[in-house]
Length: 333
Image (cartoon, rainbow, N blue to C red; front, side):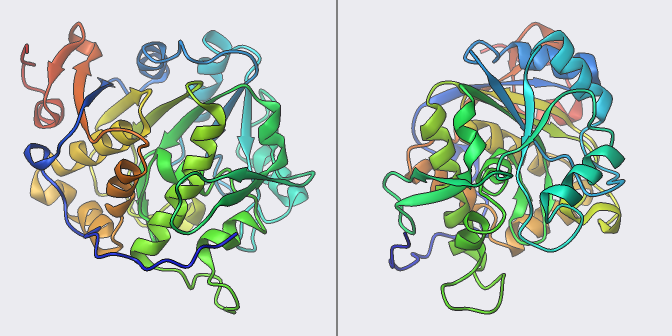
C-alpha cells in the first residue's frame, strides 16, 4: 500500500563527515585481504546471529558479469562456514536474462552458481511483509520463499549504481528481495505511470530503504551484512558486460551486524581514497543522491552511522578509514 507523503529536502547529494554525525557507535570489522580466506575471516566475526536455515542474499549477476563476487570465494564460504545455506535471488523488473525464472536459471548456470542450491524466491509467488513507520509504504511485496528461512547473510558486492548512486547491503536487500513484478514496481514506478523508472533521486532511496527495513524487521537479530569493496565500477552488476570500466582501487571487505554501519563504513572508505581515485564513484553517489540511503536508514532506526572500525589484519585494533586505504599503522583507542 502506498502512502502519499512529501519528500523533505534531505541532501542525499551531500556527504556528512564523521564528526558531524550523532548517536551510538556500532562495530564494523575490516580486512584488506580480498580472497576466500579474507572473506571467511571477516565473516567469522559476525556469524554468530545466523541460526537455523540460512539464506545468502547475493547478486549472482548477468551472464559473464565481470565484477561480481568471485564464485570460488562464495563456494569456500558456504562449504567452510555455512554448510547447508542457500543462495537466494529474485527475478528482475527489467526484461533480460533474469526476467523469468527459466531464463534466470540459465544465467545461474552460465555464471557457475551450481555448487549449492539457488532459490529464486519469487518463483512460486509473493508475500507482503510489513513496513514499520514507512513514509511511502505500509507493506512490501517480497519473493514468497523468504518465509522459508530463519536467518540471512547479505553478501554484497559494493559498487556504484546508475539509479541508486551506490549499491551496498541496503540495495542488495531492498531491491534484491522484492519480487520482480510487484515489489520492484512499487519501488521504481509511480502509480499510473508508463515509465518503469519514474521514481527518482531521494524518493527512490527512501522507497528502497523501506523495502530493506521490511526484510530486516522480518529476520530481527538473525541477519548480518558483509560488503566486498572490489572491482567497484560506477555501474551495477545488473549491467553485466556493459558495465563501465573499473577505475576505483580495490579496498577490502567490511562486516557488521548493523546494516547502516556496514554501508556507511563502505562509503567512508571510498571517500578516504585520494581524490583522483574516488572521483568517479563519488560523483555517481552524489549525482544520484545515493547518500540519502544512509540518512534515511538512520531516520528509520535501522542502525548507526557512527562505528568502530576494527582491523582484523592487525589484531582487531581500531583504525580510521583513511588508515585502512593508506595501509598505515593502525591506532589504539
